Image (cartoon, rainbow, N blue to C red; front, side, top):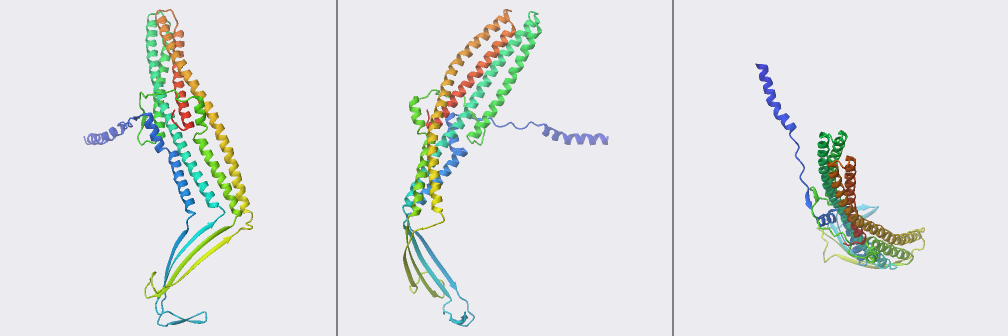
Length: 442
């Protein structure tokens, strides 16, 4: 009895532990549907590339403000106080000389200084122009990164739509395979078809089930990618029934003009302006510079530290300096060469940016037109394949066709659906890439 009681007590203790161990894990929260515009807005606000571009804009603005400040004088205030400690004696010997200590222990001083560059060979003007060009380049880069973030968000959004369409197609494939399996089994049982027909139909049914699983995994993966693209703290997914405008509201010539003035070309143009200003600024190293400075200092002694006193003795100094570098170990030549190389690189970058804009426009516009035609063609193909499958199923049901003919029609229909989904995705992405290229919605 004692043994049985111990076993019963042990079972009672272990039962909650086993139950808790077998309890199902909480399911993740369902993704929150968001519209395409919401996805783009969130991506342009939270994407890493956009935040980095905004930081570059702030840095460039600070550099421009500093370039303006170079025209202003620098001003500084100085103050100091010293206390001397004595042990009763009013004199002491320093370096063989008798020094009489003051009767007041504190010595204080205060001063004001200002310095301004009167002439620097025009360097400040060129530095300012270079800073403003870099600030403009940073602004254009921010615009480019916003459209890059929007493109990424749109691609992931379209991936969700494509995965959802694939799931719908897989569900239709499963229904067709299930219907065909029932027909094949019934004909096999009636001994008007071979057992091979029912086995082939079973294989087709299992493949349709696997397509459902793959489509579900694709949707989950696409939702995770969309959540990252929009930098959301909670899972998100594409809202169903999104209104689409697949066409373009500009003709080819207008798109070419916009592409040649797109964000990438504008940034390359601003970089070239900055490089030209940098080369001009490098030439100012060969010119003399003129500076002016003024300082006024007051000092005095007292029982306490004081920085403003009518008994202070004041002194002032106004100074003009001019300098002309004669030889600086070829440092000027090095800076000038670097500036020339930077300008040549910027010119080549601008030329390449223009050519790349035309090339990208040609590629994406061709991809859009091709996808547009494929959507129309594949839509008709799906309708024809659906009718062909219906006819083959009816013929097979009355024994006028073989199962191989039905399976061939099913395969053609599944491929047509897959091609239509791909064509729609390609058309959407091509349009998004065109919008990123020209820097505006189309």
